[in-house]
Amino acid sequence: MHKDMKEWTKVFKALANENRLKILRLLAKKRELPVKAIGEHIDLGIKATSKHLIILANLNMLQSQGKLGSVWYTLHPSIRPEVHHIVYKFLR
Image (cartoon, rainbow, N blue to C red; front, side, top):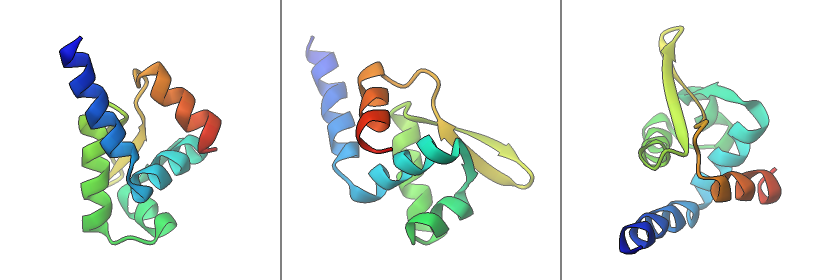
């Protein structure tokens, strides 16, 4: 139980950032995008965008794949059902 609460604390901290919410909303709509395009859509540089993407990926909210000379991100298929619900219900 305590471990689960720690994990939820991390999730809520990640979701408390406007740029990370924008990223989740964007990927819910576009399905898959490279880092540069994500940054352009949310008006952030590549470094700042990458930082937010890594935070979300470390919490299994996103997954990445290298292709076409870039790193592409999608929503993680095993994203927590509750987080998935938040993304699709409130961020779409």
